[in-house]
Length: 454
Ligand SMILES: Nc1ncnc2c1ncn2[C@@H]1O[C@H](COP(=O)(O)OP(=O)(O)OP(=O)(O)O)[C@@H](O)[C@H]1O
Image (cartoon, rainbow, N blue to C red; front, side, top):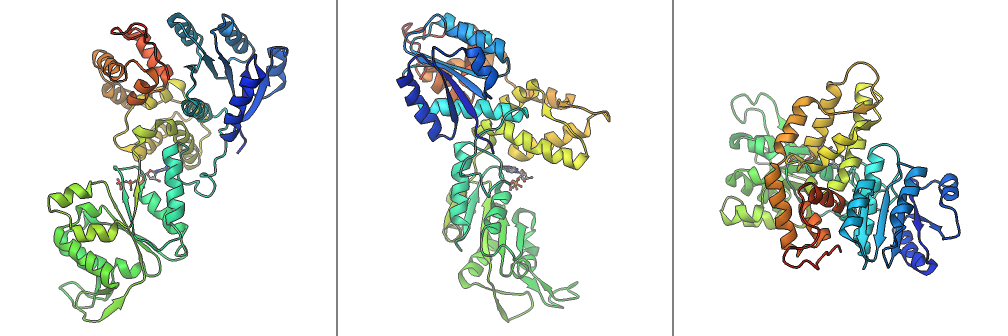
């Protein structure tokens, strides 16, 4: 994938070099706009994905003029401003100009990088720009996401896959536990052998043994022919014991025995059958809590918890939403034979504001539902079906609650806008917009000199 190009508009070459070094390390191509180069020529001749105006130690009065000049030349390019001191008025003017983000010095480089990635991801979600390659992406394309949490997760999966270790995958519903288990299997030496998934929650206690271990003819009424169980079906490959936290206590002992002895007995037979199966278990429960309540066995937990993977909920990695939308748009275009190019900006904003209790499955289902409701004519942009919009609006909190929530986050962080935005899972610009909407002062009422931004 093509690397994104960032233009830095800066008067001092040594300041530029420091920023350039940091951005290049994060896989961005960087262009320098010196005071002598006309901005218009540069923007006309070079492809630019994002512009950084600054860092300027003082707040030069022309920062906003430069911003306007860039917008006149290229109205779609996102702009980030970095200045040494920012007045409330300047931030609000930048907001009104549609600047994508605003930083004050000293610069928190990690936050700048996260902001760039988020802004570019949003552009990419609109089908207009590419975000840079990252090492974690390579062979793990089925798992969409570029946030640090997902990159770390992919590295962990990559390390665990080639081992033979038992794996416990933990995560809320719809976060991709089954997908992660499949990826482990596909990148292990067992990849050409079966991958068998068993939903332990759906198995009545009376059927667990016959399902998992199989049965001989005549073992019980209705057993008219011999039947191998899931462990045998997975022979040489991987078995996923999904929803293991919902398995009955008695049945857990049978799983433990199988893992310890590496053999099974079919119902109605005394002959042991050795099994060569890698075991992965998944759950959306807190197993340690279940152990304290004596509904999950300690010994089974320790047997399963050799390598542990935790999948983050979607609300903790909202920057991945535009990429996921793009992915599901592509999948549904193929499925429905359509050529929709993008989601409308209002839709993306709405989806970014939502908390996704059903995680990625909920997002995927929503995209599919949007396609089902499309008119038969060619459509470039997609919006959500009305019932979904109403649901999202209902899910949004009342304005008073939202104002209180913002104030709580600001007081908790001593009016540090970056940390408050993090707490609220918003970008800093969204926080500034809402502060303006609810007429919340940019500086702390208890300490008016505080206008912390980093
Ligand atoms: N990072 C991802 N990128 C693309 N698709 C994903 C990603 N994570 C999950 N999905 C898709 O979301 C859907 C739900 O994922 P999956 O079934 O793996 O979740 P789960 O955690 O096992 O859910 P449950 O606990 O309800 O069984 C699947 O269609 C899966 O392919």
